[in-house]
Image (cartoon, rainbow, N blue to C red; front, side, top):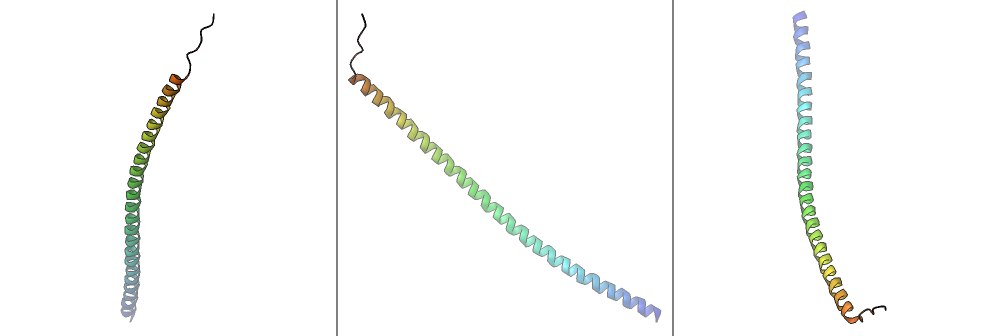
Amino acid sequence: MKLLDQIGALVKAIMSTKQELTHHRESLKELERQANRIEDMLHDVRERLVRLETLHGAHRAEIEADLSRFKSEVERAETRISRLLPEPRKRK
């Protein structure tokens, strides 16, 4: 009977180990799904960042162009105003 008891204990240990392995396998699969979701989210964030950087560059170029036009308008206005002003009188 002792041998049967040992075999029974081994079978019990094997079944327990099998259950634990099944549980760990399921946990690993869930971790893999979560990792894939995180990877997808990271990919989306990278794409958004590229779009934001592109948009930022476009806005910056637009602002620089507006600033350049404004400076040109100021220079033209200064030129027109200087033509309208009388010549400064020389002191004796």
